[in-house]
Image (cartoon, rainbow, N blue to C red; front, side, top):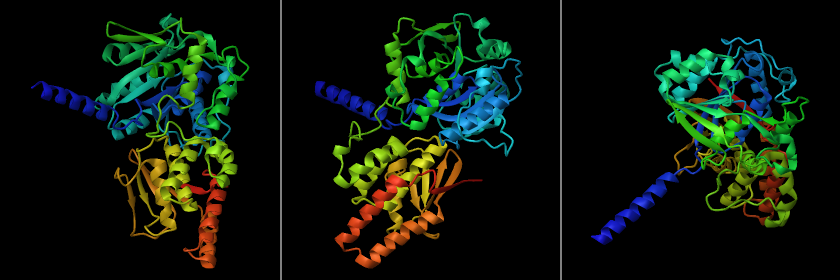
Length: 479
C-alpha cells in the first residue's frame, strides 16, 4: 500500500509539473493599456512590449497629461516605430482635461510619420473586440485616469466578466493629490465600489533615475526599442529621467515580492513600493525586462550564441551584420530553421523573415497564430514552410499550419490572430530575383551537383544578411 501511495504521489508531481510547463512561452499577463501620453507611459509601454511575460493586446488613449487625440497619435507613432502596427489602438475622448504637459507634447514617441487617413476607433469598440476574441482573462493597465475602463465596465456587463484585473498607476502616499485620481474622481469611486478587481500600484520612486545607466547596460531584444527608450531620457525636463509609471511594469514581474509589498483593506488591493530596494537591484530587474530575459524561451539550449566562433566559416562574416540589423528573434529562428532544413536554404530563410514579420505586426508570441501557406508542397517554394513553422511555432505537430494546394503556388501566407487575418507576400521584384537565380543554378549544375548546393548556400547567406523583412514583403490585413 505504501508503494502505491508513493507511486501516486510521484505521478501527481510529474503531471503537475507537466501541466505547469506545458506552454512555457505563454505570457503571465494579457493586457490592454490605457495611456494619457506621458513620457513615462512611453517607457512603460516599451517595457511591456519587450517582456515575454506580457502580451499587449491593445492600447487606448485618454486625456490627462495630453489630450486624448494627441496621446493616440503618439501611440501610433510608437507602434509604427516598433513595427507593431497591427496592435489595435483606440481613443477615448469623453474625458476632458485642461492639463497639458509641454515636454510630453513636444516629445515624439517615434520617428515614423502617422497619416490621419482614417478616424481612430473608439476605445470601447477596441476593448470589446479584444474581449470578444479572448479565451483567457484580460488585465487592464491604467497609466492615467480610470475613466476608460470605468466607462466600459458600466456599459458592457457581459464582457466585463473577462476583465480579471485592473492595475492603476497612482501615488499611494496621497491619492487625493495624484493627477490620475483628480482627472476623474467618479471613475475611481465607481471602480472601487462596484468591482473587486482594482489593484493600485505605487508609481512614485524618487531615488531611481534612468540617467544613472548607460545605453550599453541595456541590450534590448530590439535596437529600435533601445534607441527610442533612450531618446526619452534625453528630454530636457526635470522629470524626464525619473521613474513613475514604469513601476507598474516592475510590479507585474515582481513574483517574489522583492520590490513591492501587498496590502488589502476593505476589498482594495495596494502594492506599495519598497523604499529599501537599492538602485542596483532596480537596474538589474529593469535590464532583465528590457532585454526580454525574464524567462528562457528556449527548450534545450540556454542560449543560441551570437559569438561568431560557434559558426561555420562562411557564416561567421554574416553573424554580426544579420544579428544587429534584424534582431535576436530572426537570427535564432533562422539558425534553427536552417539546421532543421538540413541545408542552408534561401527560401526557408524567407519563411523565417515572413513569420517574424507577422508576429511583430500583431505583437504576437510563439504558437499564437494559425498559418495558411500558399507555398505548396514542392521545392524550392515549399521550403518556405520550414521557415514559417520555426519562426511562428505554428508547426504541423501543433496543428497550427495548413498548406493550401488548391491555389496557385506562391511565396505567400495568411496569418490568423485573434479573429484577424494578415496576408504577407514576397514582393514581385524579390520573387523574380530569388527564383530566377535558383533556376539558373539548377539549369547549369543540376540538383545532384555538389557545386549547385554550395552556390545555393551562398545565395541563402547573401539574402539572409541583406534582405530586410521591412522591405521585401507586402502586408495586407484582410477584412
